[in-house]
Amino acid sequence: IVSLLVLVIVLPLMAAGSFMLVLNHEVGSIDKVPMTTDKNRPLPDQTGAMNILLLGSDKGQVAQGAKNTSIAEDAKGAWPSGKYRSDTIMVVHVDAGHDKVHVVSIPRDTFTTIYDSAGKPHGKQKINAAFSIYGPGGAVSTVEHLTGLRMEHLAIMDWEGFKDLSTAVGGVKVHVSADTYDTENKVRWAEGDYTLKGEKALLYVRQRYGLLRGDFDRIARQQNFLRSLMRSILSGPSLRNPVTVLNTTKVLTRNLTTDEG
Image (tube, rainbow, N blue to C red; front, side, top):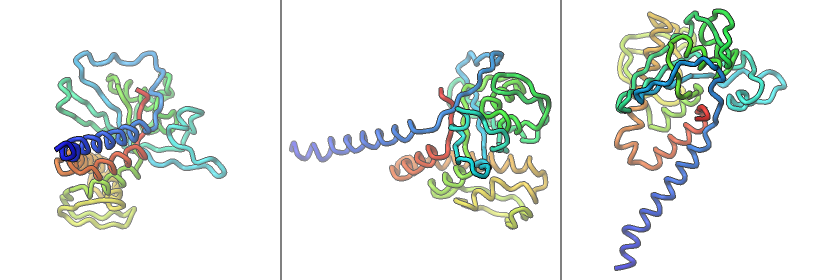
């Protein structure tokens, strides 16, 4: 009877505990960057709601002969102006009850005053220049000045992360509402439903040419993809599959950079 109890109760608990330790280790290894040193930030929300700035960045253009450093490494030293581009800028609002999430995208070509990490203005440019020139802190400061909202947290995901996440969850379901042709990447999309992963998923979220409203339609695609991706990650089958959970967590830790908080 004792042996049976060990097999039925103790061993599964030990396995579950070990699995949680592995997940905790993975999450703890996510790269961290400082937020901003701006002294004139908007006040935090007093209701318990919070805003998260989500940036989509490329891997960065490494100068000839330079070391291939990460965003986190660059943010902790002298930021390499112009190395990275952030064409996806989203403000994620979590309501006070923490049971609803709203996402608002800021078009990358939004013409506004750009601020550095310390909150110093540097004239007007397209908003994606804030991250490229002044790094994560500059992006946070610029968005806070533009919106008047406090960004409690920051998360940066590179494009490879979108691609790898779609593969880790077994594909992301999207609907293409009309026939389009991406003249930049030479890809034709027929109207219909798709389950996208890997390179095909990346082509979907990055398409701008061939869409009727250009960057605005790309924003709609990115939000649709993100909504469907989260639905896949949080669905019952995914959460009950330890391999899927672990693979998804590993992809996030490899491709995600967050603030130090």
